[in-house]
Amino acid sequence: MTGLLNGRKILVTGAARGIGYAIALAATQAGARVAINDISAETTENAVSSINALGGKAHPAPGDVSARREASKIVDQAADALGGLDGLVNNAGIVRYGTLSNSSDADWDETLSVNFSAVAYMCKAALGHLTESQGVIVNISSIAAEHPSVTVGSYSAAKAAVLSLTRQTAVDWGPLGIRSNAISPGLISGTTMTSAADDHSETASGREQIVPLRRTGHPSDVADTAVFLLSDLSRYVNGQQILVDGGLSASLLEFVPRTTEQDQHR
Image (cartoon, rainbow, N blue to C red; front, side):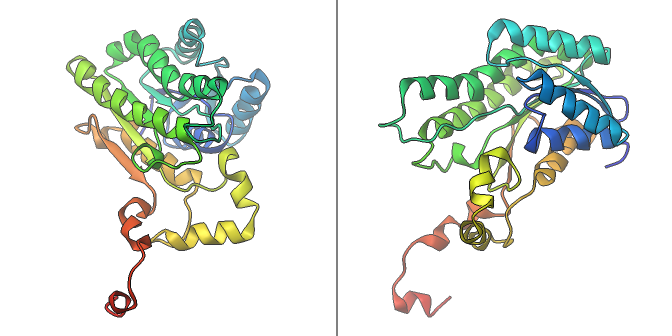
């Protein structure tokens, strides 16, 4: 990956930990300078210090991406620190557990605001900079966008909306030279969202066994895909979704109950 992003200026949201941090780190290792966004100024600074200690070039751009007016400030802060903007990675997200019927109104509103509306706010705020650089947008969606889970009804809906927005942006802004694509991770261990499952050995093992590659993903698996989409290697890829799930989405029929006779032919 070395050199793929030489000289690029990239803003990554929700980058203080997990997948966002892995993307920011991988981008710097590929030669980019990055602006780190997180809602907490302290965690943002910690991530910046960590990446810089590893030889990267990172700058802080803290703030709440789900606040429309603050989104513009975050983009401007990043562009000022980096001297422009070549790429935007919309990674910030939250999970509020609950079905459609029992999710509270507050949880529904917050999930849609952070996971979907914030993506639109950030894209619109960055439009001028990305038009000037003919830059790239990478949105982090989820396997749940197309394979909903009953336990996270608002999350699944929000991530599906992100996919639609990604395609709309590709159509609307493609003539400006801006590419827009999405990554949909599957079961990725080592994140805040998966910490409960990661800490439960039986659950973690069960998750590994249902993935064709027989392992859950790592944040670096998503990060390497993001670097590809941010680079010129994907220069003619626009409006697409890349599933980073180890083949899980392709294997769902494996879990359909079968008769004993059918199983004999496997």
